[in-house]
Length: 75
View (cartoon, rainbow, N blue to C red):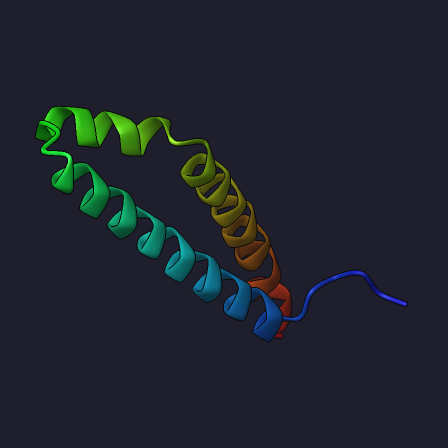
């Protein structure tokens, strides 16, 4: 039994995670704008938001896995 994700699974996970990250960013920006936060504070909030950091970290890891798989899959 292999625990390695297929190329399709990785692509789907990356796509889903990007959509989640983008949706979360839009929601945070929308709320911050309703609160009339300065743009600098909004950007800082986005950079420091723990859920966005987790999503970025997971996305980076999946992209690394994807790049490692591609040479094998092309043979």
